[in-house]
Structures are given as structure tokens and as C-alpha cells.
Image (cartoon, rainbow, N blue to C red; front, top):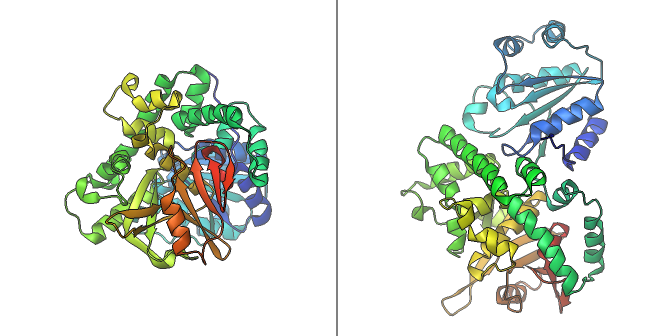
Length: 445
């Protein structure tokens, strides 16, 4: 089957970096494994430069690695590179790519001297880029600009499906706060549910385009999850990071107001748990939402890092992981999502989807809980900031006429609240001060 090259929004950000940087910084593209970093960078180097050289440190030869042993004579380095790679270097029109740079930290340290030289452009890709063993013996170059790459968002998924125009129509409807009617909304939700099932990992999307077979797509996603688990086992020999990762769907299904590590792993010191969570976040395989103790602009100032919720960065992978021990044919999430029959106890799939979409827009994730006075707890699923105001968001897969947590939060913090949203599965509408937004419009918040 032909290789699919997908249109990605990160390409435009890379163009902006190239035009504005003019060689004064290198570009480091971070992201989870299999998110499409290498494919994108190779395409960019091929399209935007007269020549390019790629060092793939996941399989680099001894000769390639030896180039970085001594950069005291920069001209000798470039002459050696020309001979080794068999290319011509053009000043200000050649890209040198360091793929999987975390596997050879010395090359990352060399960025400082290479950028200082100024003749060529440098692009790095990496995952687990900040793990201690990958940086402990090097000076991290300040000349790096970082671009975080996520799984394909919904618009990119639609592009891959051959739909170039729908998101512009949705965006206009959101801006005008005008719905499409129930019949059109049902069609839009069917389209969006396919994205939830397939996900945004390029390999999974490619498999769906080629086969239209969700069972085949599920096998691809299982292979990616196994790859992540192998990575966790390599960087955390205790196995706790992998256990925390595998338990994400179960933890969300418990409907608790925080992830409860004690249900998954043995009692762990606070410092060790914080290190594990950092490791997982750095892998870019998870999105972590922290409790904001005092919800106000500048959530970081009141973040409680011991209270958190954890999501997968890709909801397609989440659907597969939720029924990891079941064969595809027994995976009721596929059946129920396809038939628009997702019961309330599976609503956490939508919560994971909203977390993914908000995070892909560059938002850090925060939530808030507070007692209702009757031994129960109100919970606002997500908090964003907009200017001097905060934006509370509640997510509902059904029962959308009830949004007590959102209402009580807005009463409690009325002076701080700006726009307020309920994300659900029905058509766009406005109810007093609350905008009810179909989940496929989440990326416009």
C-alpha cells in the first residue's frame, strides 16, 4: 500500500521558525513516539531546502556518531559530513536533521556550536527528551526553540479523509453561536465518533484509509501501546510508570475526583511519585490535569500536584487501552460509539477527548472540586484562562440538562468567571450565560 503523507499544522509553524530564525536557533520537535515527527521533518527538509542531511540516532553508525566527538574545527566537521553523507552543503539553504536526538545527547550539545557558526539550519526530533540520563552529562543548548507535536487533531484527521472545508464551516458557526439543527448535528457527531475510534496516530489513520477496517486499526494501536510500555520499562525498572499508564481508563471509570495511585501501585513516596508523573508527562503519551486549589488567572500559582487526573494524549489509543484484555470484537466501546449508544458510565471517553483537544490547542490542564455541603463534591472538569477571567468547562456525554457543578462554580466565583461552556453531544445552543458546545467544536474554545 502507498505511504500516506498527511498535512500537518506543525509544518506551518516550522516554516515560521525558518523565516524568523534565519539560523539563529535550532528547532527541537518533541512528541510521543509514532506521532509523526520524523516523517514531518524529512518532508520539510526535502521541500524547503536545496539539500539536507539526516542523522537518525536510533540507528546511526559509529562513523556518524564520531563526527560529534570534537567540534573544535568546525570546517573539518562539515567537510567530514559532506564526505560521509555524500551531499553538497549550501549556506543558508541546507538543513541538518538530528532524528531521535535523545539517543545521542552529545549531538544535542553540539547544537550550540553549530548554530553559532550560522551557515546551516538544524532541526532535532525527540521523545523523552528531558529524562535525567539523556541530559545528565551535557549542556542543554539555549539556542533551541521547542515545538510540541501532538497526534493529528480533528481538522488534520478531516484533511486526511479528504475533507478540506468542514472545519471552516464549524468555526464560523461557533463564532456566530448558531447551530445546524439536530439532523445535521447527528451527522457531524457520526463523523466525529469515527475520529474518536481511529484516533490521531498517523499509522492508525493510514490503516483506516487503506482498509476501512476498525479491527485492523485496533491492531495498529495495540502495537503502539506495546511500544510505549516497552519504553516505560526501559526508563523505569520498577514497572510503576507502566502500571500507572495502563490503569488510566480504569481510574477515569471510577469517577473519582483524582487519580488514586494507591489503587495501582504500592505505597510510593511523594517525591518518587512526582518523578514518575514527570517521566510520564515527558514521554508525551499522557496529558495530566492538576487540581487548582484557588481557581484564578495564573492557575500554576495554586496548583496541587498531589491531586491530578491523567488522560491519554490520543483518544483512539485510549479506546483500545480501555479494553486491553478483550479481543476487538468484544470491545463494547467500539460498538456503542459507532451506534451512538455510549452509556453514562463510558462518558470518560469524551472527557479524554476534550482533554486531548484542549491540550493540542496549547492549554495546560486544570480542574477544580469543592464540597456541596451534603457530603458530595462538585467538580468542574477543565479550567482555562482568557484575559483576566477564567473559563470553566463541564463535559457531559448525556444528561446535558443537568450541569449543577458548572452552575455552582459560577455562583461561587462569579467575579472571576468569563465565558462558561458545557461540552456535550447535541447541537450548539445558548442557555442564559452558558454556551452548550458540541464536542466536535472543542478546539475553538
